[in-house]
Structure formats: structure tokens, C-alpha cells
Amino acid sequence: MKIAIRVDGSLFIGLGHVVRSLALGEAFRRDGHEVVFFSRFEPGISRLLSQGFPVEAFQGGLPDGPGKEYEPACDGELVAKLLTGRGFDCLVTDSYRVDAAYFSTVRMVVPVSVCVDDLNRFPVDVDGIINGNINAESLGYEVWPAKAKLWLGCLYNLLREEFRELPL
Image (cartoon, rainbow, N blue to C red):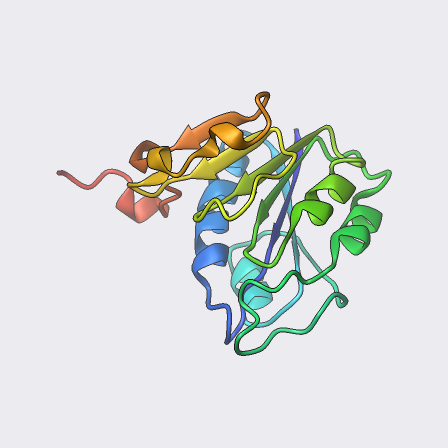
């Protein structure tokens, strides 16, 4: 499979989304899948590149900055354009700065769209939701599309390799 992962990391956003997306990318790569990251800001881009992944850095959407953590970046059309005609089987998006319009737009160009979510702020049209938080099963994801596969709870926490096999 050819998998796109859309994630940003910056001085304001931090690198948490990037680190957990790297864990997912590593798992896909270990299973023989091709993974390409799409990202807009430093130092996230440098971190992705340092782990040996191809990264397509792009500009566009609303800028990053303090107080904009949950403000949609309005880059769905741009991301859809970057993905169109390139044979991606799946897009995984890990960002607080997306909205329902973003997911409606990108799902037109990829067969499978997955959302890495923490908060269940609003339902979106996706094929799967990953939320590895301890409270994920109590957040009410049943209002999302019925077809969406749910990967909820600690069993699905996206951990780096060095933390996966620690004793309890």
C-alpha cells in the first residue's frame, strides 16, 4: 500500500503529533508499505526527514501561531491537489487544525481516510478513527459515520518503538 500521512509540528503546535505519526509510519514501513509525509512547518519537517521518511513540505492554508491550535488551517483543497493522481491508498490525518470540510475534500482523492483524534470535537466523514487515549471509548464516537472503524483506547496508543515492549 501507498500511505500518505498529513501532520504538522511547529514551535506553537509542538511535536507530539509528529512523534506519534512517526510511530505509525514506522509500523507501516516495517510491514512493507510505502509512506510519504505531508507537512507545512519546521521543526516537524526536519524531524520527519531525520527518521528517513520522504516529506513533501508545502505552504498554504492559514499560518501557525499562538491561539490557533484548533483553528482550521483551510488546507483541504491544497492537500487533495497534492494527493490527486498519485496512487495513494490511504490518507492518515493527525491535526487539530482540520474540520469536516477538510475530510470531505480529501476523501474524494483517496480510497481510505483515517483521522487520528484526541477530543471528538465533531464527527467527520472518515473510514477510521485512531484515539489511543485512556478515555477514548467514553468520548461518544458512535455519532461518527457507522462505517468508520474505531481503534480506541490504550491498546491503540501510537508509541515509539523503544516504549512498546516495556514491562508493566
